[in-house]
Length: 120
Image (cartoon, rainbow, N blue to C red):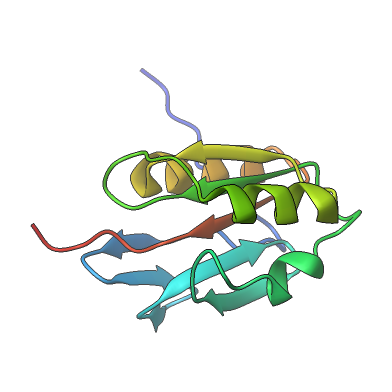
């Protein structure tokens, strides 16, 4: 079987994640993250909208990683993000990271806001 190497060119994929952290461009983030082709920033969770507002009209969808398990988002968060004009896809953080990297490599207009997985 022939496997093609994924090339990301000038966009920033998520290198890895683990209990309480994300690794992106060799840097460790010990918080939630917001990541897109426009940059990386920490994300403090469902009350933190500052970096999400910066993505208005720049992306088509934002993947929200909710930790180990997929869970419902707080209604206030969902309404606020929709008011900004962002489409949400809710999934577990591992699924959100994988999906983000695949679609990013295809040149899609996407972002991820993810909470770290907790140690089990």
